[in-house]
Length: 166
Image (cartoon, rainbow, N blue to C red; front, side, top):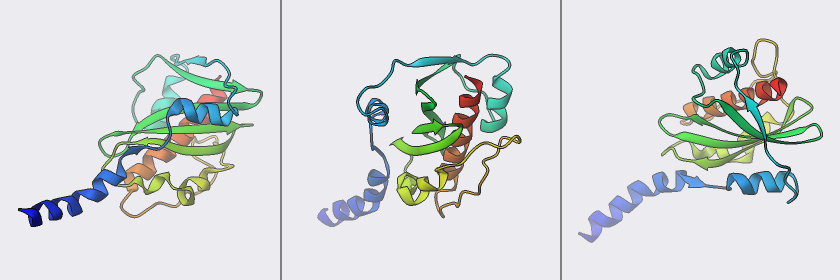
């Protein structure tokens, strides 16, 4: 029986380690504004904005508005997208219409959590959105995390697009 329990723990431990809350969204927002977070603003997802969202995500967002935080030229977005089966919550900072920071806040998938590490997320720093709604640079993938990589790329593009719409 003990051998069975040890084997079960060894087999499930990577799954347990992959999931997690790495930073609460409110803590991320507070850290960006150094503890003095502005009040949230709201972007209404009008019929003029929705086609761009659908072009980026491949589906509609099921909300009528998105909250964001802004101070001067910097905006902070907390967005979610499905990786393979579960939502991934990401904090994204846009400054002068360029990505300043992208951070995985909550990861719920059983695999692919490598996307949370700086070796991956640092690739997004300085990226901007082209007129064809693609990022202006190539983001290298991670073997075994293809769907999570795709979700983060979509969210980066979405944050840049929404920033342009405000």
